[in-house]
Length: 78
Image 1: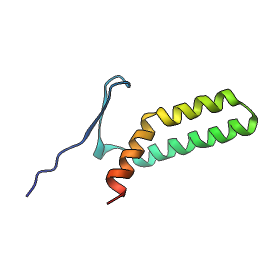
Image 2 (image 1 turned 90 degrees about the vertical axis):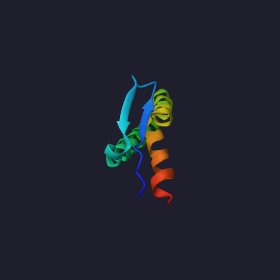
Image 3 (image 1 turned 45 degrees about the vertical axis):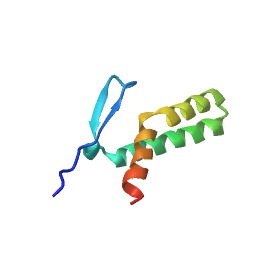
Image 4 (image 1 turned 180 degrees about the vertical axis):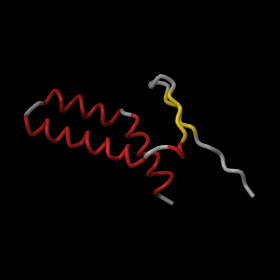
């Protein structure tokens, strides 16, 4: 019987934050990303271009987007 390895994600830009993959709350991560997308929509609708650009950068470069990308590739594409 093979022994499973635990995956630990280390993000150096986030104060050396280490989290266990099995303990990640994916519903919260997806929810937070969806809220950010809705904030981008509202800012665009209100004509606040500066906020739109900031939120888009936050959405793309945030740890949530990286977690979702890895989750989709490793867990959902089996």
